[in-house]
Amino acid sequence: MSDTRKTAIAAGVIAAALIALFAWLSPGSALWWTFIPAMVIAYAAHLMTTNRRRPDPAKVLPVYLVGMAWQFLHFAEEFTNGFHRRWPTEVFGAQAMTLNKFVWINMISYAAFAIGALAIYRGWRVPLLIAWFFAVMGAMGNAIGHIAYDLIAGDLSFPGFYTALGYWIIGPLLVYRLWTATLPDRLSSTVTLAPVTEAATAR
Image 1 (spheres, one colour):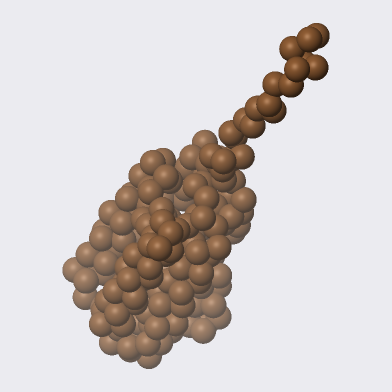
Image 2 (tube, helix red, strand yellow):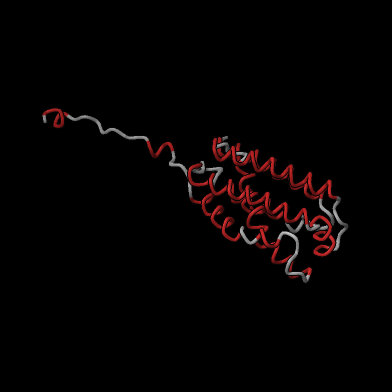
């Protein structure tokens, strides 16, 4: 079995475990419509890109870290405006999350995203799944989702909306860099030397 297939299977096991965890933690159907499809998309993107070739840290990591920094500001806006109460109830018709649960989910996510940053830097294939999940859910998911939340709740200032606008810049750029900015394949950098012929030595 090739290394690429082994890492694909390992990432698949992690993705499946996280999907099961999201299903268990979900307030009503909230994570079924957000985190779970985002993980499926992230895994598919990982298989097509970063599981095959390492991302270029010089091009990907700065955008990723800016996205992480912005995520802290986004969390602050959500935290101070009652997102943990309003998102489950007004958007999905579920019970509100406790504040403790909301904070723990976010802090554990940010710890995982930090490992994703390290994976980009070190070229660790399996944890690059987490980097893709941040790009899909943390960046693009927030950009698109908060517009939907505003429309469903009928409130154009739904908690998190203003900082989510920044992800319309960060998200597409991060997805593009993860998809395209790869390091050259090691085999392609190998120089093949032509055999030295008698004619060449005669020169």
